Structure formats: C-alpha cells, structure tokens
Image (tube, rainbow, N blue to C red; front, side):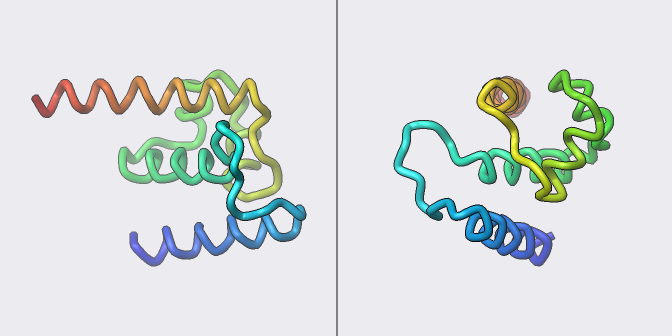
Length: 98
C-alpha cells in the first residue's frame, strides 16, 4: 500500500502544479487534494467501495470517482461534509479501541 500512497501524493502534486496552486496553502481551510487523499486512504483501509463512500457522504458515485481520479476537487460545502464524515469515523474508531 506504501507505493500507492506515494503515487497518489505525486499525482496530487502534479494536479496542483497544473492548476497553478501553491503546494503549501496557508489558509485555515484544508487543501482539497489533501482531503481527497485522506478520503482515499480511509476508503482503502476500510475496504469501502466508491459507491458506498458516495452514499455515506451524500454525493453521486461519479463525483467521488472524479475526485479520486484527480479530474475535480470537492467544493467548500463538499469539503465540509467530507471532514465531518472523516471526523465522525475517527471518533468511532477511537471509542472502539478504548
């Protein structure tokens, strides 16, 4: 899985440079590509399909597919829902480990 994450990181950096965005965004919001990386990592670690992930977040399957393929990035509202989803899942996992 390590090589996959490396390739995903490289692809994100390439997409950022093609869009003319700086790699280090200093705004308080999280970089959309970082959010997509976290979402893909969650999906792979928990063996969740793109379709199931889309249903959990409340978007279409094709939207998740475009994010993960680097064709688009989540808008601000979608970013909020993704962060909320990932935060909820992290809290539940920590409770289970306790």
